[in-house]
Structure formats: structure tokens, C-alpha cells
Image (cartoon, rainbow, N blue to C red; front, top):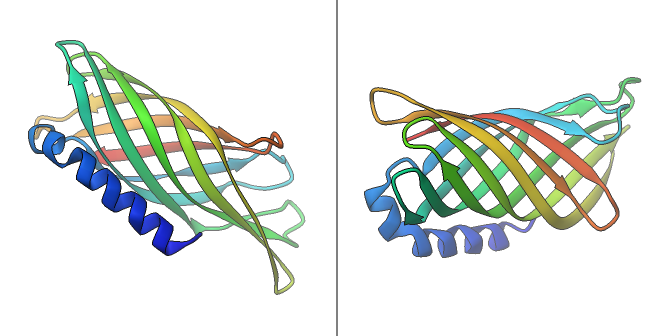
Length: 172
């Protein structure tokens, strides 16, 4: 994945959301989760990531915002035969809808750029793409004002290649 492209996306989103983040400190998070490859021969990989965003519109029980997520694999998945492993890096921009006052449900949809690397016997093969990503989540507030969020996301591209991501995030 092009590091310069990722840096530009982060700077753009930080510029757009800085003023909204000042009043909503709950839109910076660290996440960890399990990636499930569409091919059942591939075992899950473990990803970690950062999320930053802000609310654009807000009422008592509904909020609409933007969110940028960047993630990378820290533990590769393997095939059932252990002859090949895989990992994924991604960055995505989402429109996010929160429903609820303290506990909330989350719906998100957006655009994702991703790169999957397959390693087999010292040889690496890359598959890059972009496409739609969407997800649902549940947020649980803590007394500190921070919260936990459990989320399930899906991504796909034009060729029907897909990966699912179940993650737990800690929002500051």
C-alpha cells in the first residue's frame, strides 16, 4: 500500500474533522480484530488499526459523521495445509450513523483501498483493490466517557472478492 497515499488520506480527514473532534472526543480509537478470508481454506488473520473521525450532524438520539480507518495484519493467517499465509493492509473512509444516546448501534458504509499479500515458500504475491465496505456495531459507554465498540465489517470489490472483519475498539 502506498504510504504517501495513506498519509494524504489521514491529513485530509484530520483537517476535515478537527473542529468536530474538539467537542466529540470519542472519535479516536485503537482496534483489534479477526479478518476472515472469503476462501474457507484460509484461516483468520489478526489485524490492528486506528480510527479517527468526527460527527457532522447530531441530535439527542442520532448522529451522522465521517470516520477514517487504517489497519494492518500483525498475525498472518495460514491455509489449512500451512503452505501459504496471508495478511491485509487497508484504509477506508466511512459515513457513520450512530443511533442511541449512551449505548448505541452503529451503521457505516464507505470506500476501502486494500492490499492482500500471499506468501508461499518465500515468494510473495499481492492482490490490490478497492471497493465498497459496510458494517454494523454496538457501543458500550464507560464511566470515564470513553467506550468499547464491537463491530462487524464487510468489504468486497468488482470481482466479488471479500473479507469480513470482526473487531473490538477502544474509543477515547
